[in-house]
Length: 215
Image (cartoon, rainbow, N blue to C red; front, side):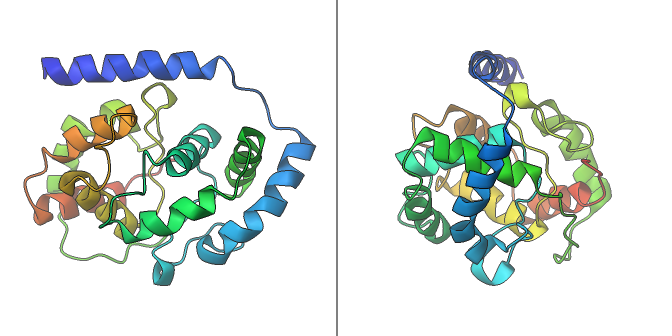
């Protein structure tokens, strides 16, 4: 527990430093982001609603700071370059079409402005009551009691698809995600994911998240 608290504190300090440069999106930013989002919409849907066929999660309404951070990771290779991460390898060249930091900020602002979706659960076999116990012990400090997200720890709101959440837990546990030295927050998430002993535990947590309202 002490190591976990130190890791959260370190991540919070880094996030707090990053917040100082934030600025509200302008109408021009949103218009530019909408134009750039056209490529993203081919997989994630025109309204960012997600498409399981392409393994592209719902992203509408995601926090601007989180989208910006993930696009930066995909572009730099901190995320999405593991040879086993098929979806990440597909996402990375998409992120690299965003040539400047202003492009990334504009797309992130547009995604954040889209009405958040509430995807219906599709997974079965999870026990939400068991998952709730684990979530409160492991996930609340970063993602919030209602999965509403926490910018200080860079934990996004969890209103995406349950199949995507399960897939990401697998990636964190296997090392496909969160092992790049530059991805400090991904490394923190990997440590937490490693506390889930098996598939059933992951299904339980995901089932519990589906009962929460992160809005």
